[in-house]
Image 1: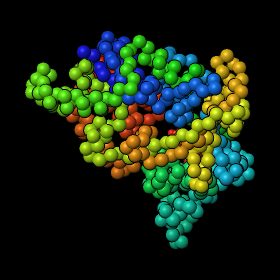
Image 2: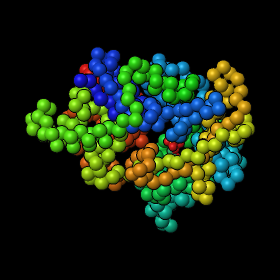
Image 3: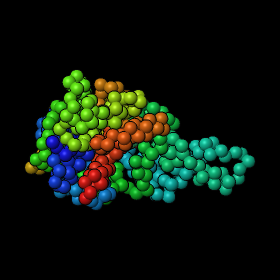
Image 4: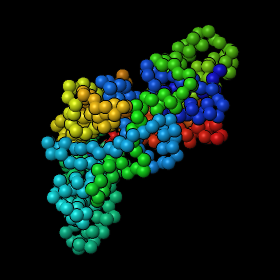
Length: 417
Ligand code: UDP
């Protein structure tokens, strides 16, 4: 009997398993896919580590998390600096002095701030309820006190209308399949706004990509912990339930036919760490949660440099894909020995609404879904032998470092370390 059955060989499961084993527990990791790593899985094509489930750039402010990952893999010095392509006009991201200079010709931070303020003033006046009777001071106070209630209002409050129209509206609409007015404002708060000439996408102390790819990182964390691939936990649970009901086995705790939660460990583990979608665990009993999925069109090209950058976002609404990733640039176009790679691999990313047969990538954390999640969370809390974790298990738009921090925290609580 294992102490823990870890469902999902992604970063949450791998870290939890490692911590449990360090604490003297035994674990078995299973995954329905035929590889470890979950959505951070990378695979080598033409000598290039291809991010099979979308680009992942590790970044964190958490020293402990950085220490943790760098104990298991060497990280390179990659800094994410995406470029936005709006109908052939190129802008640096995140929004910084380079973006403002290209957009408006402004040269100093003061000029940039003044331009943004001017745009906000016009756009937010209506929303903030400014009337023609208000003097300048009252109008400014109303605008300053205005609380954005959706992504569009948040974006305009942060950065004004031009940038919203060219760099946010179309991209966000495509990525989420919803108007910016129907999306929560926190999504856009992920992006920094800077009045310096700094194209670093992340406000993070530490950043980089594991040398040799993410699969190696997860492989090193898992080490010698047993892993079974191609095993679908929910199918196994289903067939076990059927078998047990048919045979009326009484050897399991609970006597006659064990209650649902006693099936959790499949009879081979005391407890389960489940990192799949929480709604799927409960057979969508309360209806499905909303997710966005992504489809990738990946090509090997006989050129050494297709777009000159790892990430180019297409921010208009007409281009059907959201971005093109050129994977070799995550490792500076070099192989592990520093040699140039002659070919390139690119992936066009198409965002799509999730349907039950597709892969969930992003939780859609709008009010309706969050409310539904809370109900699933109540059910999850009543499942005594199961820990739900990770982006899908907790229905949260986690970054990789947050997943690791959450897994370490949960492991510490669970294992009393
Ligand atoms: N975003 C945008 N324009 C861009 C890039 C991002 O409007 O060129 C917005 C969009 O709403 C997106 C959010 O910022 O959902 C977060 O972007 P991020 O790059 O963090 O998303 P991820 O890499 O997780 O897909």
